[in-house]
Each structure stands twice: as structure tokens, then as C-alpha cells.
Length: 434
Ligand code: MG
Image (tube, rainbow, N blue to C red; front, side, top):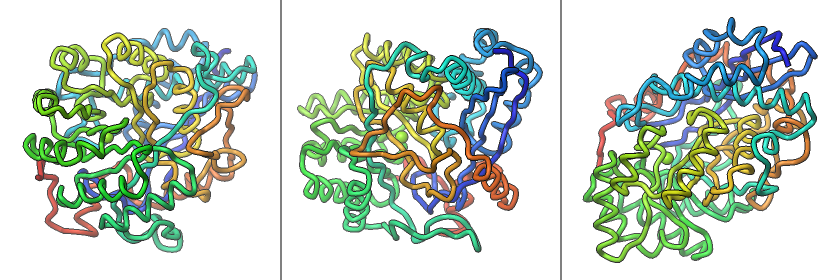
């Protein structure tokens, strides 16, 4: 499976004005689509972080990729797996996902691994999940991912999109948003992106969601480190009942020490709500300290920056050994990423929670896989017997994505700039805010 060509397509897709503690989503989210073609004319694909920096990191490896064997290449590129650094500076407290220079190598490796695995799968006629150890589930369950948002459906000018969900800046409108998303996709668990409104309002939102959906729907709240330790304790106490039954506090406050203290204090009060994280813990280097301190009980994996699918499987095993849960993180993405996430999830036995996905926030107009959007039915994505990731590129749609990228001014994700532009010219990301 000698590689004869590497093609990287920088694309943009409409993204609604979603809020988080990082600020506001820009009207377009960026992705890079990787194609790796073998001398047999078979092409493997991957989707990764967008804009200039991820593209440049991939371009740097062009010489090494061309002429290499798809599987030998992954062995040769192993040094990339470890990334540029460990320790707390590798966290995502201060940088949006995809913009941390310390995990550039890990992200780059993941994109190449995914494309190579897809290439191998398509060459031998086998699905990726079965190549990486075999599926332990036929379909993968995802969670509804709710955001406070301003009015608007994303895109700009003539490309402005329909606002499917409307403005949502109150508990009541969040209940409506959730009803709409759950009805459309059949999700059976709910994650609220928080750190946007006053904590009292966010507590009230979770309470109303619990009232509406009942205790069979696990509830998660993720303020991306916007709260102080004291505030996290208050929220943990206030939502003791609502976050039980499979819920968690996701990155309520920053740092493993704070998270460990939060856990100890809540436990001493009889509150067993676990801490989850994709901010304090972003790499293997964070795990020893975490195990020592029992700071985070549920790790959110993401093959896009945890150095690919097989490293996520290793992470799953470590979590199992140390009695930690494993969930999955998501960024704005299209169908190639959704299928890659589903394949790794299908082949990771110790995945103990429904995965996150932003997929409902993207529209059919932007989808780049042949046949259009991947169905999410009853909250599940099916991994079929189709070879590789089970999807191929729609090159007309890909060309439209490239055109959108060329036209739009964005070259990296910057939620602070967008917040200043549309909401508050003096906005600063204050951590902790409450
Ligand atoms: Mg998170």
C-alpha cells in the first residue's frame, strides 16, 4: 500500500453563534480534509482541525508520507504520538481545542493514522473498527449537546443559514432546544455547555431539563473551567439529585488540585457526582498525577488530539485498570469525523458513557460525504460492514467547502474575537468568572 499522493483540503462550514466560556463561535467553523492515495488508486480520508496551522503541520510531513507504505508509515511516525509537552501547560484551560501548540504532533499523527487506516480498510475490504481490534458494539450512542446561543444559523451574507434552533439564552428556551434535538435524533442523554449565564441560571436550566426529561436521561454540565472551586461545590450540592444516574460535572473548575478538592469535599457530603474532563486532562502525561489525586473520574477522549484511534484504545484500557470512566469529546465536525469517532468508539470496550457530538449543529449544505448527512437514529450511529470508515468524499461538496474557506476571512478558531465583534467589544475571558 505504497502512498503516491497526499491532498489536503481546507474547508469552511457554517456554524451557528454558539456560546461557551471561550466566547462565541464564528459564523464558519474550519476543517482540513486529508486524502492519502495509494499506487493502486485507492484513497483513504480523514477530517481534522481546520485553518492554516494544522494544514502546515501536515504539509511538513509530505516528503515522509509520499512513497511510504501506509502501515509502516505509522510506525515511523510514532515519535509524533507523544506531542511536544506534558504537564499542566498541555491543558486546554486557556486555548480552544485545536489551537494548543503542544499537541500539534499528536493531532497531526491522528489525521495521518485515520487516513491510513481508511486506506488499508478500503484496500482489504474491511471496516476500520474491525482492523483496530474488532468492534464490541455494532452502533455507537451519542448524547444531545446543548448550547446557549444567539439568534442565527451561521454563515455570512448570501450564505447565511436558517436558524434551526433560534435564540436560546434562558432555561425555558434551553428546554425547547433540547426537546427539538432529542425529538429529531433520539438522544438518550443530555449535555449542557455551561459557563455562559450566571450559575444560578444554569442550575435552573438543569433543574428544568430534569423535570422535563426525568431521571432516565443522564445530565452533564460543562462550564469549561468558568467556576471557582467554591462555585463548583455550590453547583455540585445544588444539583446532587439532577446529576446522579450517569451525569457528571465536566471541568467545573481549572486544575487537578481544585478538581481533587471538589471531589473529596462532595464525597464527604455524600455526593457522588464524578468530575469529567477534556480540559485538565488532554494527554497521557496528565494521567499519573490524576490517578494519585483522584481529581477526574471520567476522561473525555478524542482521537483527533489523543494521537489517534489506537491511543484512544490504550487510554480506554488505562481507564479500566484505574477504575475511571471514559467518555468522548467533540468539536464542530462533519461526517468523516463522525464516522472516525464511531469506529474508534465501536472498538473501545471500556467506553462507559454516550459520546459527545456537535453534528446536529452542522447542516446538509456543508456535508462532504457522498450520500449526505450520516443518520443518527435513536441516538445511535451505526458502523456498517462497508470498508474503511464507510464513507467516501463528495468532491463537488468538498469544492464548495474549499470555496467557502477561500471567501471567509477566518484562518483559525477565535471565540474571543467573535465575542468582541458581536456581543461585547470589551469582553475578556476571565477565569474563573464566577
Ligand atoms: Mg468539555
